[in-house]
Image 1 (tube, rainbow, N blue to C red):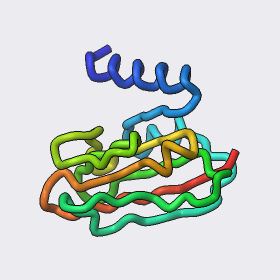
Image 2 (cartoon, one colour; image 1 turned 90 degrees about the horizontal axis):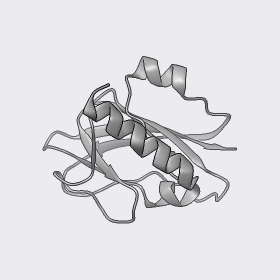
Image 3 (cartoon, helix red, strand yellow; image 1 turned 30 degrees about the horizontal axis):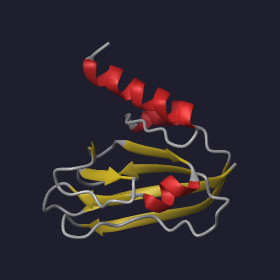
Image 4 (cartoon, rainbow, N blue to C red; image 1 turned 45 degrees about the horizontal axis):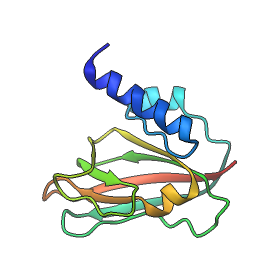
Length: 129
């Protein structure tokens, strides 16, 4: 097990213990095997994400508690603590990677920015329990 994998496992364990946030970065094929979303209520595309202004998914329905998103075109950074990421601060995710968030407040506070000058796209499914 690599140090990177141990770190990711620790993040998931801590997040699950808190019952609010779990993050997993995987290839799309692995994500399809490991992630089950029970009741998808909306699909959203964030396109033309730049490194100048953060974007987020719209989750006005408080029943929305899960987000599964894939990074499509360019590397991004994200944060879900209410503070916008920068091109150098936040969780990095490469194209083909995923973001999985649990908890309505985490989804509402999610903020995404491109890591470089190349515009990024992130597509997500929001679901209810």
